[in-house]
Image (cartoon, rainbow, N blue to C red):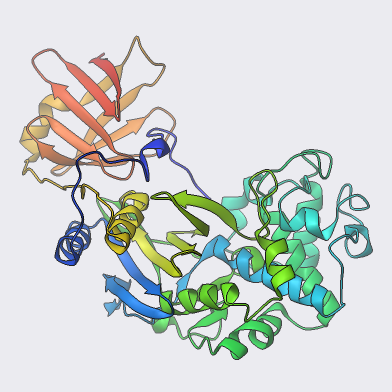
Length: 440
């Protein structure tokens, strides 16, 4: 729901050819992941399975820092938009049961939605509806923690209007899957949580998956965190807002089991699964197609509050990977890449995380406001204790890690700031880009 503006992540670097890199051993992977945890870069649980058998799995950090509850294999994490894969399966099961068709129009259920008479169930499943994404609407971050009724959410979504004519293009919108959740409740005359339980969780024996967290005592709830000098708790979005677009909690092993069952034909017919996987303008129905290490994969990710979630399924290799996190101060794409490189025996240079000790006195020469003739970006450099902080004008503060003399890095984005105090200058480096700044 939030994105870095200051440090635009260079996604082209992910899953690319790595030249003379070496294969990754399990010991090297364990060391890399342990280093991330020890340096406050990551907390979470991950698992890899091949042919239904676990081949790698581990967990780091805490489910709840305040109560010191450690993360375990069965810790429940909010999986955000991975919930959409579940909701798409439920819609297709309802279609198989004759309760709806993919071609029927939305106006039969929600006539107040703009263009409802032209929007089909299929349009919503593969993000071709044009319905505006309500999480991009004004004030969302202020009201996201409060419960909402179906009537309230439909009104909010309707007020957002339409971004384009249905079926003419594609744009990701959480609104689609909130409405699909309500549609399921109408056709089954049951709450979404009960539909999910009866159609997926019980048949697959997923005992560590649920919708919403109201049944969990406070001390057992997994909290999410953001990093600002130290881990800070993030308030939970109320599950009644994302519904089947982002309201599911589950463990990593349960996510692996669900994805395996989906591709083994345990949830949908072959025809329905093919319909779900068909990509139109880059969108399947609650699932995307990708190519990693020259291998075809199906995937979805999720981000809600401080939680992040990923799954990848490789049909040829019958391999499933899931990572669930409640705290990240690092580019998790690098974590995914490292684990999958190990899984497939692919060459990969594991990132290093050098450390360099500085005092608040050492930071004094770097402090100030920096401008550039090469960019409109203005960056204020301050400190808190012995931590250097960089704040682009009008944006959030980014804590920087000292990695060498005069060098500081923001690992999540891969940005390095190199200072030359004698010249009052600073260079911002990311990938092959270098932008030079001078102190004002």
